[in-house]
Image (cartoon, rainbow, N blue to C red; front, side, top):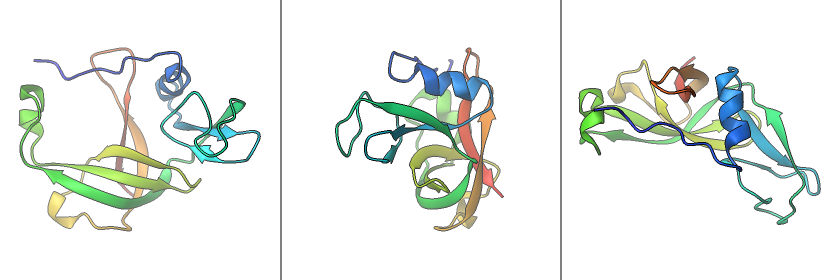
Length: 132
């Protein structure tokens, strides 16, 4: 059984295209300067629609995390236990990603991470994080 794949739409297409090119991008409001992720049609602060895309360094820290011990779908069964983390990127946005290459018992708040892109069976790779 295959894992779910990204399904870009008008709002997320730019993000998924940047992942395909090996870049993690986030939205930045030209009107108020607010940065946001995940992508949305309008700014979550001022509701303006003049949004730009900026690249992230891909570096940050673990803000919060959970260890998954029960697979939500059969296709994730071989992965358990695995870590889902909210990471705070250097640019001030937070993103939810899988934390790879680390024993779940050793993950901690504040752990330095870097984003990388994991190939999928589809067109778009998935942004993941690993300790740095």
